[in-house]
Amino acid sequence: MICAELNQEQFIEPLGSSFPSVRDTLAHLLGAEWIWLERWNGRWPRALPAASEFPTLNSIEQRWLVVETSVWEYLNQLSEADLRAPFTYTNVKGEQWTYALWRTLFHVINHQTYHRGQVTTLLRQLGASSAAVDFLVAHDMNFKTSPSALNS
Image (cartoon, rainbow, N blue to C red):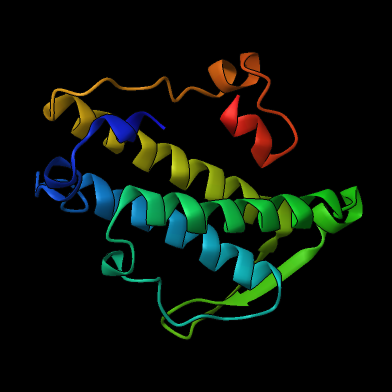
């Protein structure tokens, strides 16, 4: 992960974005993916995990591997009919919403893309390298079917 170039001070340095630091932004990305996985599995968490639960990059990577593996397992069992079916969930405010399941999947992708762009900006502010975040770049790197593709 490109964020490994950062030292611990840089990782948690407040930089003034949607979330204070690279760590906090990554923790939000992880938490958002986790909360949607929970929703898809019929559970309604009332909050995202706190960024303080992830003091180091390694702690984020370890938790994210578990979440990503579970997301891929969930996605791999979906049919086209499942994707079109209504999906109802309760958000953290206790409000109930219904969308076609595919729309929630698209929402997560869009959300993650937005915040990956912020991480890119934060990395540049810290003088670190930044990784390409475009979908077609990931596609060209064989990002296709499993979290193991993230490591190639």
